[in-house]
Amino acid sequence: MKIRISVLIVGLTVCTPLFAARAQNSKVAAGITAKEKVSSLNDAAKKDDRNTSSASAAEPKAGAKTASERIAENSFLPTLTSIYWIGVGDVLDIRLLSGTERRESTLYTVMTGGLLEYPLAGEPLVVAGMTTDEVGVRLTELLKRRAVTARPQVLVSVREYVSHTVLVSGLANSPGAKVLRREAMPLYVIIAEAQPRPDAGRATVIARATGEGTIVDLNDAASMNVLVHPGDVINLTGRPKEFFFIGGQVNSPGQKDFHAGLTLTQA
Image (cartoon, rainbow, N blue to C red; front, side, top):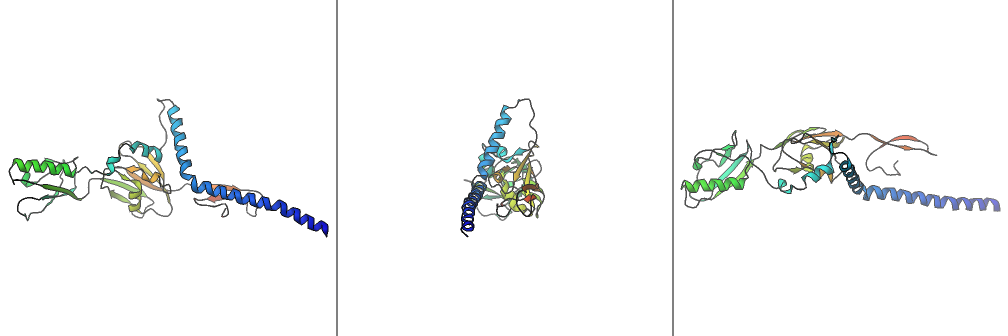
């Protein structure tokens, strides 16, 4: 009887620290997943940048760009998200604030060639590539020159955005052309409008200017800030299948499907 009690005590002594160690390992694994996910992505991006810089300059760069590289390229262009250059097809609302009220329409469409026909200004003028403020200043100068009113004030705004679009395809509930109301917009804005399907996990952004692609994980909030520009193409695809293996004294060892957010207990 004494022997049985001593064996039981020894068993408890051995199992207790083993269980505690397993619990501690589980906490550590969960902590890394929750707190160091973004940090590890940034470290990987920096490591990739170092490898790229050490390579030969004549050696072409293969594969699509990462989101961190695309964000770095756009970091010197913060103003693109706050301006809009008028283009063909845009509908402008032009209001003359001085003088008597006029009943004619204040809406004018930018025609082919970027031309705007504003009768009070005389000949059509090119407005493509200008901001609304620049168009307002130009029209004010022309009205002063033609002495339409003593102190003309022209207010110009975009009533309907048409010229700037991106194309969304793939796993989206609302694919197709999406209108940009700025020269560049964060990817997450476009993705939200496209309404990705539950099985969508990645977005590949193909830049119109370079033809290069940027792969973005839809669950990575930092990467979703990558900027898209007019003419870019966004393709939503599923996440590649990932696996992990379980071995040892378990009822169901072998290969298992992995998905983001999987905990050690669930595995």
